[in-house]
Image (tube, rainbow, N blue to C red; front, side, top):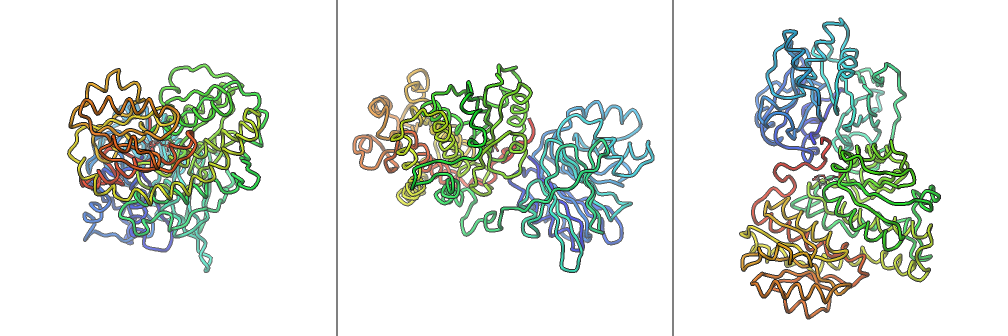
Amino acid sequence: MCGIVGYIGEQQAYPILIKGLHRLEYRGYDSAGVSLISENGDLNVYKAKGKVVALENGCKGQDLTGTIGIAHTRWATHGEPNQVNAHPHYSESRNLALVHNGIIENYKALRTELENNGMTFCSETDTEVLVQLIEYMMKSHNCDLFEGVQLALKNVIGAYAIAILEKKNPDQLVCARKGSPLVIGVAKKSDGHVEFFLGSDATPIIEYTNQVVYLKDEQIAIMDRKGRLDIVNLSSVHQTPQLDTLQLNLDQIEKGGFPHFMLKEIWEQPNALRTCIRGRLNPTDKDVILSGVLDHQDRFLNCRRIIICACGTSWHSALIGKYFIEEACQIPVEVEYASEFRYRNPVIFPDDIVIAVSQSGETADTLAAIELAKEKGAFLYGVCNVIGSSIPRATNSGTYLHVGPEIGVASTKAFTGQVITLSMLGLAIAKVRKTLSDDMFHMLVDELYQIPDKMQWTLENNKGIDKFAERFTYCKNFLYLGRGYNYPVALEGALKLKEISYIHAEGYPAAEMKHGPIALVDEEMPVVVVAPKHGMYEKVVSNIQEIKSRGGKIISVITEGDTTVKEMSDYYFTIPDTRDCYVPLLAVIPLQLLSYYVAVTKGRNVDQPRNLAKSVTVE
Ligand code: G6P
């Protein structure tokens, strides 16, 4: 939700900032802006409605000099996406410019107070209130920028990651965070000079340095041209910056010949999952080793219940995780929308384990849900992709997905990474609790190990989807059906289509179709049925008959060699056979490709669908 970039050093800042904005555009893209302190000492701000290219076009012919700057790409919360509301925002005297990611919840009260003190505002944003408040504090307390920021932030309720430039002090860059992420890149040059880079995540930083400091909540950082990095908290206690080395390379965040990140990430899944299971699934000993579980065996042995909190696609993978963990470990598992859970005073016991599933590790509701669970004494476990993000830092233990950066807004490889990680987690817990026979355990490990190869097969053998997707671009509605482990796959397939093609789609448990959605079925209605030769296969076949007899078009996902459903289907995708519990890892792939090609044929912006953002760091 909004991306922040910053730079101070010896290089010209503008090209670095624009490149960084392009890398962060997945976080929000309704407007963008940049601020630079120019060579002749002006504090310039340039903004544009729309994407970063619109900003670049608007900047042509302007004074873009300066070796210090901040920039922002916005996903609007307060105030419509237009040029005025775009960041950076000036303070009234134009001595300060600020960019912000997050929400200032008490901005109305603060604005009224500032207006009563004679300050005037240009925009409708909560961000302008923040920069005005800092200026007000600096004037009324006759203090410097750092102290002004500290005083202002003490009065603020909400979440923020901010970066600020001060015209009168062009040799320092100040930033702060609470609840929204901010990473500082530190690049030491051979001549001894140090330059600093700022980013909402590490993607704008990686091509300059792999040395980073993840700013923590309520920390303010001051970077200057002499290479000084001071970190102080809101109570003025100095903090020692902890330097981490990024495990990221440039190839991972570029398209590598694919037209879209989404397609690249779909095709990356076999290798991404190989990396995910490496060192964790051992095919020789048929064992699973998750240090996150091994280090806390007693908690898993004695836990009464597991609650999984997540949002969006991560909620779908959590549901598959529930089915698996309940079956393999005989522990009750509840799956909660984090946004609901956090506000309804849920019953949480100290011997509960609460698992947060999140690609970004930054989703505000998921973070708040685990904070609530922490207060009630539960043990917290994170299943996240982004290393060093807020959720892994807030949990007692966890497992990273290690599927590499996911840039496309519609989640693909993170979904399958979450499903395979939750399956490994279920196996690791089953081992601790001895709930599976050795034979069953070995067989499940063995089969899980085969999944990346079977994913590759699925990708190679469903190549015609681009051709037939064209026929569905004019449909107004889609229905997705699945049972058991494949009900969440139906939900995920429908979400993918909605997100990127803007076609209305619903996922339903196949048998529930008779209680409502069947009324929608007619010749215009494609019904996607996940129908592997497993579990309730016969019952799903009956559901398909019911749809066909009402004229619906059947698009099925079938097991290789199944002729029954194949003959009943108007179109079909084939997946190799696997255990019932692992079918989602394969069945979701053709559904990802279907939504991708329908959206491309409709001319949609697949990687940056309207109104969505990759990382939702506001409620
Ligand atoms: C947004 C993204 C989804 C994602 C959801 C949860 O809505 O567009 O792709 O599933 O947030 O994000 P998380 O990072 O917590 O998995």
